[in-house]
Image (cartoon, rainbow, N blue to C red; front, side):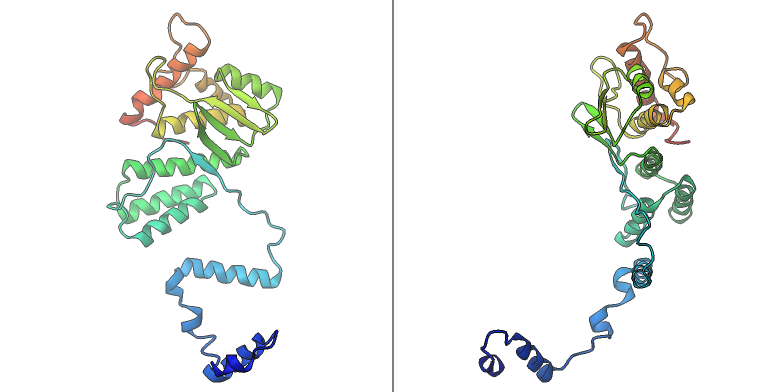
Length: 267
């Protein structure tokens, strides 16, 4: 209090600070009390922070492109159950590894590690791996967002040539192409034409994978599958002919099979 009372002039804060250092000392600036310990953030994050600091000091990585965040917001029950991966730290570590996956090979390595450490994968974990697999595919197609928007699924950013727009509207009737905002709105797939519910879990991921491959990546095989030729229950609705009825009959198949071993995304 005496120090504060003695320094009342404008700009006297520096003098107060210096007097405080004189009275109490500078402390252990480089010790664990100030800097913390590796255990506080984890070894992996510590190594990354040190690497980033060294790269910044050397002036490296300034021109490197950062990984674009990929947002997938679909009705999928995908998570790591507490009884499968015990401990918050272990779950966060697994989530981090899945978020950093940039290739199918990397995803397969994460799957193998989960199997080795925790045993057979429950359905929510399988769904989580399928979401990561779809994220890799969507990022390869240039997407940063696949989300539910009302009665549609929103894909963006998308810039489709005229031929791809025709393919989209032929395979997915009712789709909207919004060139101004570089997005595509596709009607949500349903389990049935009348009284059906929106597809969920692996079924909706399979549907979204087919769309990305057939329309954005130009896969002939995926286009043929989307047209209703390769999956069980995907054939055209008898007597309806081509059109919305055909598309609805096609997407009823995955939902019926989702609970009995439907092929997971990307396999």
